[in-house]
Image (cartoon, rainbow, N blue to C red; front, side):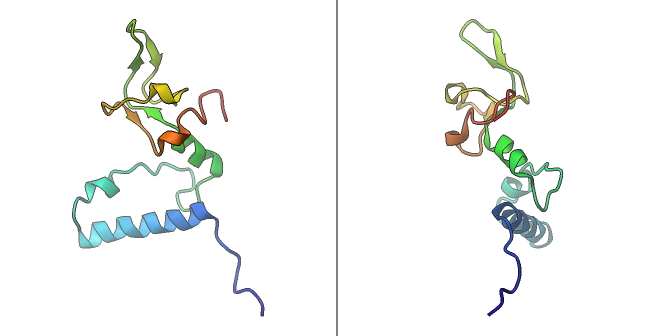
Length: 109
């Protein structure tokens, strides 16, 4: 039997699910829509993000300048963090999953 078609990449499947969920929240409402509708999905090709873009997003990003004990800025707002130890529990870092913290920094993968 011939295959019905080519399989989609996981990122393309998840993008489709995300798009449909957002559409449902916009048109039908739901409990706490902000959690979904305010997610960042700033990919160059939103319906099929590039693997590198997803990897960068998986890494932790600083939402404000991160300071060390001497009050020096170690990571600027908007930059990727370099180490798991730079994660913060006060809301100034955004992490898809802590396991990926420091996996893709400004220096690359």
